[in-house]
Length: 64
Image (cartoon, rainbow, N blue to C red; front, side, top):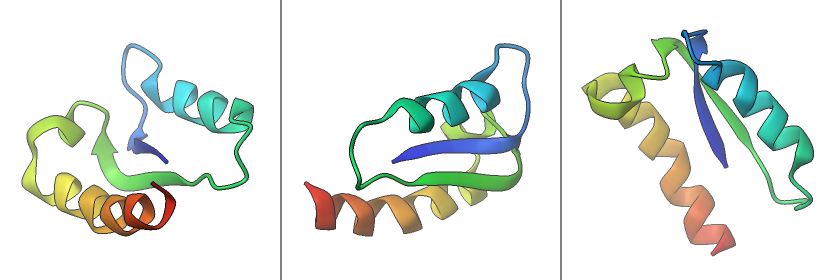
């Protein structure tokens, strides 16, 4: 799973997220794009973190 915000930032995390998921060999992969937030918002803003965790926890429970 790769989680990115949909607001591109200064260091390319948005673009890199798409590249990472494209190169991933696993068939069990998911790109989660959190709308209206940037890469940096995903560190400590409660709402985008909540959205990411809501998807990440079930994904990792199923795939780890």
